[in-house]
Image (cartoon, rainbow, N blue to C red; front, side):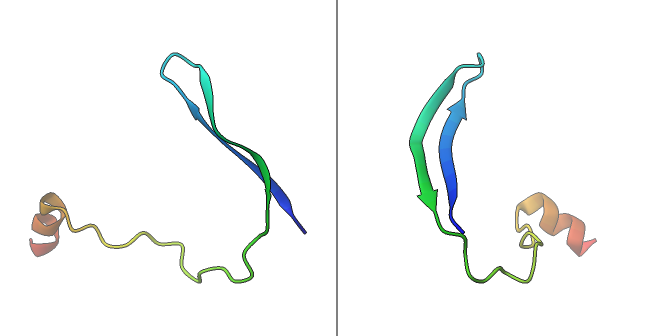
Length: 51
């Protein structure tokens, strides 16, 4: 099964700009088993974890 994908950007004023024209893409055969984001390592979060 193939899918189509078109990449565009919406400006602050609501205008659309096409970054990539519509093209066919194949879905991945395997999907990652986790949907979690990695642990944040910014200074603010590191302070919160330590306390």
